[in-house]
Image (cartoon, rainbow, N blue to C red; front, side, top):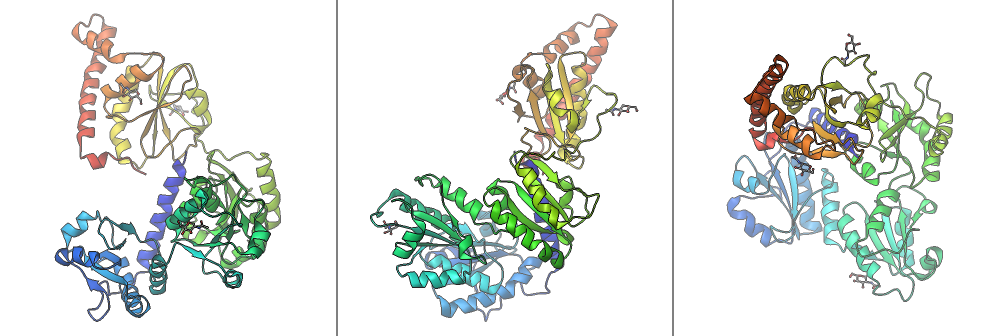
Length: 539
Ligand SMILES: *[C@@H]1O[C@H](CO)[C@@H](O)[C@H](O)[C@H]1NC(C)=O
Ligand SMILES: *[C@@H]1O[C@H](CO)[C@@H](O)[C@H](O)[C@H]1NC(C)=O
Ligand SMILES: *[C@@H]1O[C@H](CO)[C@@H](O)[C@H](O)[C@H]1NC(C)=O
């Protein structure tokens, strides 16, 4: 149930992009021929990849703003690497010239950076920073083992004093050789090596401090925090899949009071525990809240993540959390239930009150802010105008209820609107409700909305909702309601029969709507027959 999360991620990313575009530099997408960057073409590409163990390839277009900004950094990184690690090569592919090559790698945006390890098949996305030293560090790290062995406690001690990034340490007691969990740890380290440093030690001082019993211990030392704040794994034994280890890292690698933005959003939503936001106007404001929130971060570590959000950049996000755009504000988003709990905005936010608010949240003593349009006084159309406040009652009525969740700005929703209206008219007087929900104005629970429109049938017998994933034509939807609704109401057969022999005026009026229904059905077909990629839902 992560609909709003994805929407929000999209919003945040969009905002980040806008911000970076406007801060765009002037020139220099194409690295100078004097630099160590190698220009690759269709002819040279494959040989070059095959003959170098590590290649960072930038697919770009000379006109693209981000490429211009990256260009000089990329060239400077390439030059540094010549002396630092000559096994690593940086290359550029101009996609305005090498169209086929770029199409082959499904390049969709510029610049796209990919890492090749000696083979065109062995390719992964570059996920590091775009400054020269960021590129260098990221690439050099790739050439190092995924897990560093710390045989000497002294080296580890000094490393922990000043971490360049969070360190995840496996501590193996004596006799813990060749455990399957060790393999798992190495596998996880290889997957996440780009975000963290991984280490392993059997040093006695660490064993006695962290290991209980005979199983290995796992400890996360977070960058910029005291060693005493390190998180120690307390779950079940690590299995081969490593799910528990991934979860542990997801949750515990977060700073006590982190920062949320386009880059970090995903990792916070992946942790899937409540996310508490402090929206701030200025850095001073954030600093003033820091001690209050860090304390909470420590207390509720693993239960709630605490983040700051720069309202001057992402203030709009308040709307997604059902809050007014008045800052500073404090709001907790329970991601799992998709419920939002905000501190009263009618008075100024007092940092002293935050702790008590969080306590009440943990105790389940807060009411979520539910977004809903007012319940309409009357329904004026066969298409039921459903709102958040009434949603659960209606979908749990003893009728088959077919609901369209839409957003006003969504093009596919607009195309579907007349067909849906028509569909609703066919069920007039039957035990089927055809309804629509403007999801931008109404919160709903228990529906997995990943795009607009999302169509869902709630069978009358109360069984699980069924998601509609078929052609958006009137006939196909009516078929679906007949087959998957628990009342089996069949509108199409009735309509067809009547079309053959209309008898009374009442019936011929049904026929009339049936004729136009067929028209709408055709129209529906035409809509879905349009370019396949356009049929993707929008978010
Ligand atoms: C843990 O696994 C790695 C990678 O397979 C291996 O090199 C290392 O020797 C193992 N360590 C122990 C103590 O078994
Ligand atoms: C129907 O019309 C009435 C009176 O104009 C209005 O109060 C009500 O909200 C309308 N209902 C819908 C679903 O638009
Ligand atoms: C009924 O629902 C199932 C499961 O979603 C789907 O595969 C099937 O196509 C539906 N039936 C019709 C007639 O759409």
